[in-house]
Amino acid sequence: MTDSCIIIPCYNEANRLNIEAYKTFQKQNKSFDLLFVNDGSTDNTLSVINNLKAELPNTSILNFKKNSGKAEAIRQSVLSLEYNYKYIGYLDADLSTPLSEILRLLNIAKTENKRFVLGSRIKVLDASIKRKVYRHFFGRLVATFIDSLVLKLEIYDTQCGAKIINRELAASIFKEEFKTKWLFDVELLARTKKGFGIAYCKNNILEVPLNQWHDTEDTRILFIDFLKTPFVLIKLYYYYKQND
Ligand SMILES: Nc1nc2c(ncn2[C@@H]2O[C@H](COP(=O)(O)OP(=O)(O)O)[C@@H](O)[C@H]2O)c(=O)[nH]1
Ligand SMILES: [Mg+2]
Image 1 (cartoon, rainbow, N blue to C red):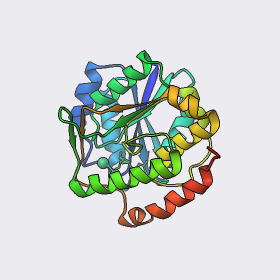
Image 2: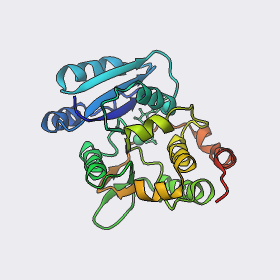
Image 3: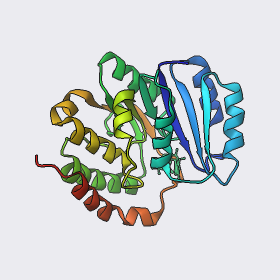
Image 4: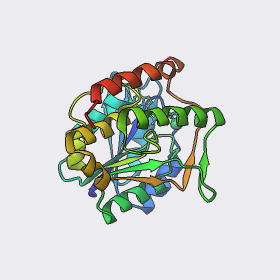
């Protein structure tokens, strides 16, 4: 057991999981534990991750019979973790953010003593950030509203699926059920701000530009959920509104 655990939410990932990438990385770097969470998949994700676990060091599995969505699955996983972890993280199963990058975020959290480290997809010359043009465009539009309407923390990218959070902070911000399905990362930040204040956020949250992020072909997000985004943002605005 290490001092950090990275949660990998999996919903129908049997064909998308890059087994070799997980094997190669985890055998070479035993820097964190991996927790694969199967969230009521209807394909054979469970047997794929069971096979993976048999070959990988520091790996465990949580299996939910019924699908409850990424936010709730990660919440339940965080709440189930042992107290001896210092850091908890999560990462998309398709490795859009590679494992080497989540390790870099973890090391930054440790050396810079930060409690919430966010991977950020900023397209700059020497980074390899590949997102389809329409996803980049809508992603930036939503991100702009998220920060200017809900958070007001000057965060560029809340929606990247790679995060590292100090365990004590995580225990507090994952305690209550989320109000939304796909914007729970925003809720985590809004809860940090509401619970600990803006000065705490400025000192303890760090956004780190990723060197590599590659979109994979398909997505589990339904078009209908995407259409609902403006209404969800308004809901979040009213729910987490503060006098600041
Ligand atoms: N636990 C759980 N994870 C999910 C669910 N839907 C998607 N995910 C996971 O969330 C991550 C991101 O999903 P993806 O479809 O790649 O979303 P995108 O990259 O934002 O388009 C992947 O690890 C998925 O397996 C769900 O219903 N439950
Ligand atoms: Mg993806």
